[in-house]
Amino acid sequence: MVYASADATHPLAAWLDALKIGGRLVFPLTPDEGLGVMMLATRGGEATYAASVLMPVAFNPCIGARDTVPAEAVAVAVKTRSIMATQSLLRGTVPGGTACCVGDGWWLSSAAAS
Image (cartoon, rainbow, N blue to C red; front, side, top):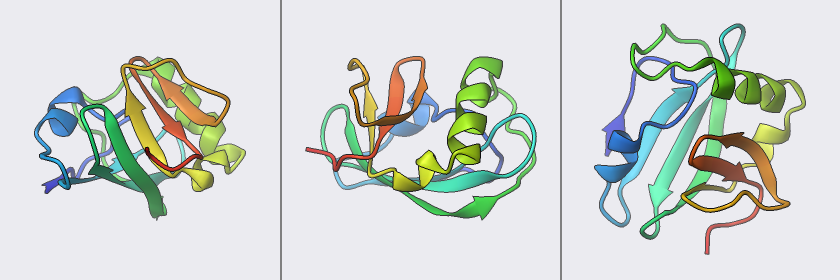
């Protein structure tokens, strides 16, 4: 299990890469301002993770895990509450119609991981 205790605008590749199949990542996914969400991602395959929102949160920033572009995407997803429908986190694929938050090389989907 990987647990981050400082907020990030995106899941770091190092965190996701550290997980074995079935391993879990818990981290606060937040915009630059306001509340974000505590995410739980469980590795299901090479680039797929079952994911869910656990609760709204506010944390201190994680140096090296903050970026303006994904922060804006997270802010929109939190504001519209689309992030609450998250069921999977995907990497290295083109975001599909079920995308509820998109970052560089990763995206959250309202569809279950396959």
